[in-house]
Amino acid sequence: MRFQSLAQIVALCEQETVSIAELMIAEQVRESGESEIKIRGQMSEYYRIMKEAVQKGLTEDTTSRSGLTGKDAQRVHSYLGQAESLLGKDAGNALAYALAVSEVNASMGRIIATPTAGSCGIIPGVFVSCQERFGWTDDRLVDGLFTAGAIGYIIANNAFISGAEGGCQAEVGSAVAMAAGALTELRGGSPTQAMHAVGLALKNSLGLICDPVGGLVEIPCIVRNGFGAVSAMTAADMALAGIRSVIPSDEVVEVMLEVGQAMPDKHRETAKGGLAQTPTGRKIMKELQASRRRRNSTP
Image (cartoon, rainbow, N blue to C red):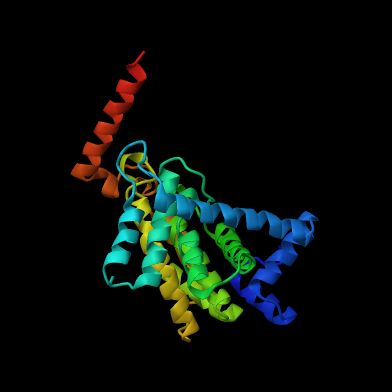
């Protein structure tokens, strides 16, 4: 890629008078040697799978094998149809859809890692809900995925996107930033505004630990996807309103790296700290281990 920082993305977009999505597509064409039609076709297939996961999470049994999670997306969606929610229908749908995809992941369904399986609900949640709200075509949302991909590329290469490396700030935080930047561009914001959205989103996620109860991508991962979807929309609206990330987004990425490296191992996907080691978390772990032993001893 010709860019190695968020600032370089903005500079190239301004220099060539293109959007972040157009820049990313051109870079992938140049690097892969594939045609734009083929590259867009691959991304279109990814978006189709995301939409299928949303629908599956809202209509099918998503109870996980552990039995710990499932059908919360349907509960939220039903609530939105029966009551005047505090979030309102549009943000509420983003929340429900993000939960839906994350529950499909926990129940061994097919999802697209964006950027990881643990954060797979955030981008589909906001993209599908905004598509319904604004009447956007699939092609426009595919552009949004390229924008998100450019942002994720920078974060992955300058910090990390793995909870095992940098905590949940690296997974959910990165996904929120990717979604926020993409939403800003989809709503007509400039590349500069999109990068301010990235900085605003990441700053709100700094220090978020990865503490999966029972070592599973279920608790608290699924609800963090729901919160993340709403946070992404908030960051995008802030940027579109003219709010700036006073600390440049590239510097925020550097801070995420610093915080992640300083984070104790017990807070980096090991299930040795945080919520995983609460009395209830330890009880769940023991029950899961006993259940596995029973299954393994069954002839």
